[in-house]
Image 1 (cartoon, rainbow, N blue to C red):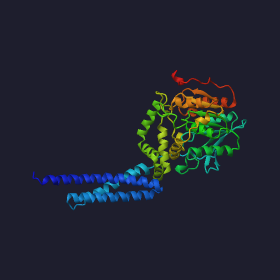
Image 2 (image 1 turned 60 degrees about the vertical axis):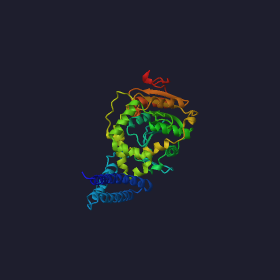
Image 3 (image 1 turned 90 degrees about the horizontal axis):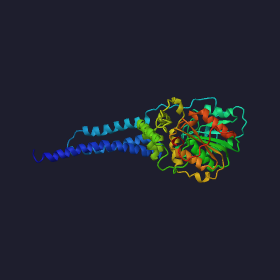
Image 4 (image 1 turned 120 degrees about the vertical axis):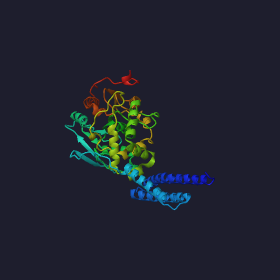
Length: 426
């Protein structure tokens, strides 16, 4: 081997290294420009075009440098540096953002009516009532955010049979209600919509029944409008405040189940975490709403709603159970709620009677539910055996009977739970 061969080989190796860097740099630059442009302009076409031009310019520049380092006139390296990144980014961006996902909307029904609220929200709702003998209307406040209740018909019917007018409403951004720009989905907006609904019904006071996130929304509404609620029920409620539980609000088995589902739904996980990290507008610009909502529906449908019990098996729910679910309102609302003022100081002085339902297999920690009982001065807790996070749907007869008794002032069907430790660990 002569002395002149080593520099030549080193130069060739460096040239190929530049080729590899050209490919990887162009791909990374493409996505960076794509997301930044989508986030700042909200224009999908402009984002794709600008990202492609920048990536193309980067690839051509690095490819030419590589060819010069090799000392040859071939254009093969340059062609690869241009073709490979563009093929990769086109395939990846389409797979992630553009490929459709099955979305199940709430079915059209003549029973769905609408409120056009002064807040600007158009809210879909279903009224369930027989002979109304109680003056306060009952509002079912669903969870999610962005997860309109589709399994509450039997529960609502039991309340209607007891003489209540029951309104199952779909929060803005989900179901058949209107959609907003992401920055408009805030906790304050949901509270304002709820107050506007009360005024629409011309009711001095309402009864609120909140499930999951709906319990959190109920608590914040009561902190803002303490005199407008006659009675309230929270079933498997979410954490009242973002700083309630620094180590998380899920049970160990609930956390394990969600982690496993995220690993199975990688496309949803990537979209969810991108949007959470500040790219909500970018994700919304590039991904059609039906696609995002379809990914969200598939993910939630896979969750074990009873994973708070280590041996509980996920129920085989129909696809319609997540119909009308919407992702962007979920992410934006939760981001807003995480920055909201703590409602607990105000609620400790709220004298509204509150029924707290704790489900045995809820995937939220016991302490999350207990905080509602311990915060409201006039709170009563009942436990629901064998139910998961969707307690009202899991046990509509049992929970319906308990709620009716609470609302009408009749004796409760079970003794209230008052201990500090978890009910099923004693």
